[in-house]
Amino acid sequence: MEYYVGISMAPASTVDTGVAIIDSFGKIILVDKLYSMKDIQFFLDNYSSLKQSHICVSLPWDNSMLEGKWRILSKPYQMVQSNKHFLNRENWTQRYSTRGAEYYRTLKAQGIDITRFELYITRQAMHLSSYFKERTPADCKFLQSALKIEYKLEDIPPNMMPMSQLEAIVGALIMHERAKNPDNIKKLFDFSGLEVINIAQSINHNSDEDI
Image (cartoon, rainbow, N blue to C red; front, side, top):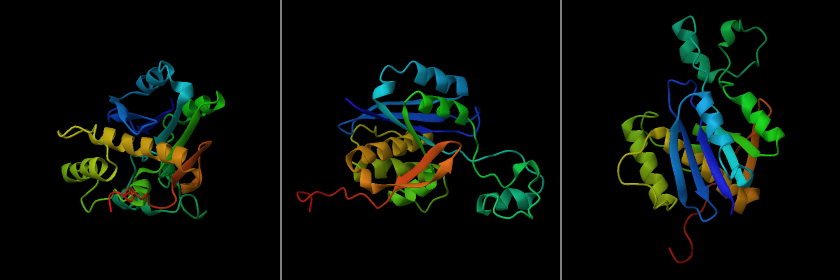
């Protein structure tokens, strides 16, 4: 049995990190919330099926404090380190946090199949983006409904799930898709020693029987 693990990595321990595990049949067998990096390490180090699992970890935004409102607002739109004339004080052009990157590289060195994904680009590729503000209750409800209906995840409960767990399910679905259709996965770039992958084209969920 193969397992597909998604981790929605938070930028800091004050925000919950979501974990989701899907089996080879596309069934959700575990969702959980973790906080500190020690929690994440303890979970993976004691996960009995680690060698039979394929892990995809999201890239958390770098939310370090910046001087000046214009730097805070423009940070997500800057091309990272593309202009040598930028005064890159306090790494304000750095979009993604390297939190946990060293530990994930250690897992890769041990032969564990582990990659990264960019959450919002992936949601767009999988047709899971909403018109609502990110991580609001409306956006959370949309994502939960889309996962349940479009991806036929009947294990998702009717009550509202934490957004971090729903985002982790997205990561697990990428790895499940890679196992079924490896040609439908493309590499975006490398980040801190690991590949960042995405869906090459939207997944067709409708079989001939559904049409």
